[in-house]
Structure formats: structure tokens, C-alpha cells
Length: 112
Image (cartoon, rainbow, N blue to C red; front, side, top):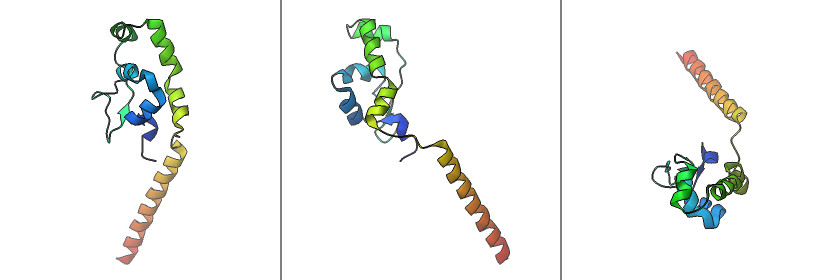
């Protein structure tokens, strides 16, 4: 799995999960140029108040809050079924790389 894959989303993934509310949540979470990360992936960033978004979209703030809570990032992650790369596994990999590098350095010193 690519580094950071747990935290980014493609538009297709979001449309599949969010369905009818995709346009609204595109505004809430900046599924636009602002939220574009890299390789067509988006990071969910809320930088506007829910009050402003609700007013612009002619819905009540309570309705928007309920929709946002229902669709919270934990719910999104559960629906997507992606898993985080455990930090322990990353550290283990880094230690292995460091160990191999040190062994290669020692072997080169014996050649001299």
C-alpha cells in the first residue's frame, strides 16, 4: 500500500460512498483544487464554517451537522476498508534497511 493511502481519496471512491450528497460534501471537505493532493487523490480538509456551507446550500445547520456526523471520517474508512500501515511495521522496515546498510559498509571496509 502506498504511503499515506489511508488518508487520501479518489473522486470515484468518494462518489461511491457518499452518493447523493457528493456535491455538498465536496464543498464541506474541499474535493476541489484546494484539497487535491497528488496522483488524483484528495485530502479531506474543512476550512469553511458549516454555517456558511449550510446557508449557501439552503439547508439547515442541524441537517448539515447530522449528515457530516453520519459520514464522519471513521465511517468513510470503515466503508473503504483500507488499513493503516502499522507504525511498528514501518519502524521494523526502517531498522532492517539501516542494518543492511551498515553490513554493506562493513563488508566494503574489509575489502580494502
